[in-house]
Image 1 (cartoon, rainbow, N blue to C red):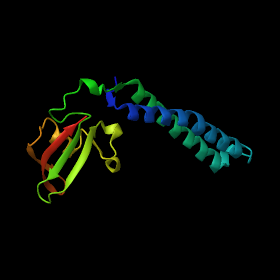
Image 2: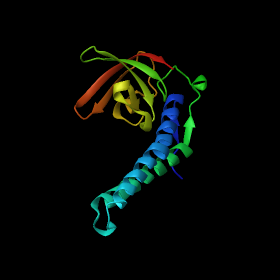
Image 3: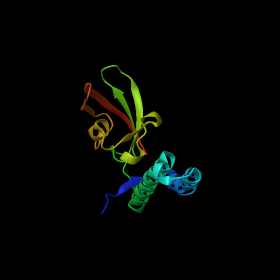
Image 4: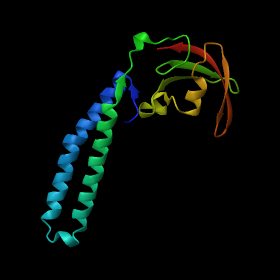
Length: 157
């Protein structure tokens, strides 16, 4: 059995849309490429045909992986979460004690992580280091470039 993955409503919706796009547009584009390659003659020496068939295999594998993820996806009910400590789905504001910079992150599952959007994985060093912390608590987190000393300033859902 695959691992359960927890999603926000937005993350689950994004996953469903990606799967639908691959099933429809992705499959039709591959079918078109295979048909065009077939029309060029002998399939045994047709590199375009073999490349299109390989792309089809990769597409079907991606669809299968997304279907597995979706089958094991669970939606998080934020109304039942405790915002007194950092946990999955917490939006946490932290202050870097070294440079005094303040940042906000949302702690999400690995599949939803997107640093540009301020979403960090619960399994990342920073995500792990912040789990269970409360407002005012300072934690030292080992990261590849050294040690990060963060103070939890605020926790929201």
